[in-house]
Each structure stands twice: as C-alpha cells, then as structure tokens.
Amino acid sequence: MQFSLYDFIWAIINFFVILAILTYFFYKPVITFIDNRRAEIGRNISDAEQARAEAKKLLSDYQAQLQAARQEAQQIVDKALKSGDESRQELLAQSREEATALLENARKEIRRERDEAMRALRQEVVSLSVMAASKILGRNITEEDNARIVNQFLDEVGEIH
Image (cartoon, rainbow, N blue to C red; front, side):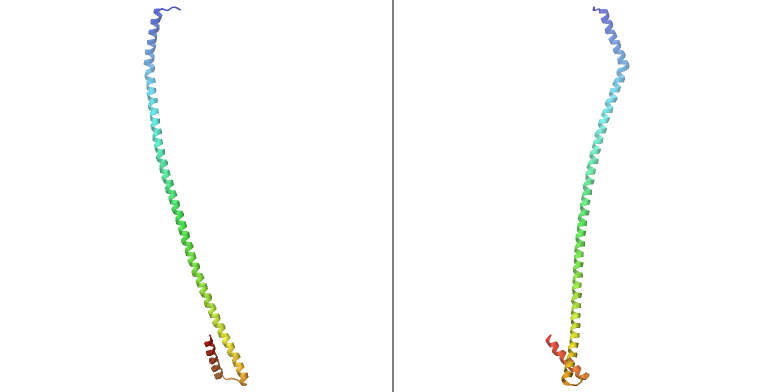
C-alpha cells in the first residue's frame, strides 16, 4: 500500500465532516441525555437521602413509642401488683375480723352453755337436796321451806365459785 497525500487529505476532510455531522445531530441529544441522566441520579440520591432521614425519624418515633409502651406496661404491672397486695391485705384483715368474731361468738356460746349447765346442775342439786332432806325429815317440805333451803344452798354454792 502506498501513501498518497490526496487520500490522506480526503480522509481528514471526511473525518471532520463526519465529526461535524455527528456533533450537529448527536452531540446535543447525547449531552442532553447525559445531563438528564445526571439530574435523575441526583434526584434519586436526594430522594434516597430523604427517605433514609424519614426512615431514621420513623425508627426513632417507633423506639420512643415502644419505650412509652414498655413504661405503660410496667406501670400497669406495678398497679396490678399493688392492687393485688392491697386486696390480699384486705382479705387478711377481713379474715382476721371474721376469725375474731367467730372466736368471740364461740366464747359467748361456751359461757352461755356453761351458765345453762350450771343452772341445770343447781336445779338438779336442789332437787336432790330437797329429796334428801324430805327423806331425812320424813315429811314433805313446803314451798317456803323449799325456797329457803334452795336460797341457802345457792348462797353456799355461790361462795365456793
């Protein structure tokens, strides 16, 4: 292959003509496309940073709400424990009062039954004494004698107790 100046000049002219045509028809659209793409990427980065900031804010809000919910739950648990303890104390006090009342009622019942038994015993002793006295005396005792003997006997028995 031989080197020809004529071919070389035409190649350079063709190159510049093609370069001019490409520049005229394709340079502006390619630059516009690149600029648009650069702007879109910038917007995407900005949107991503904004979304990240919003997500971070939401995360901090959720964490604050979670902490508040935990505190509220702890307060509810503490309140329930306190209420349960108060109920337990009230039930214990009520049980003590009922036990004291039952004990007092039992003591009253015992006293009443003892007094009743003592009365019955006295009456039985009086009857036996009257019968013994009438046998000893060999006669029936009148009501006046009976009342006097009973009163005398009760006085003596009362002094013993």
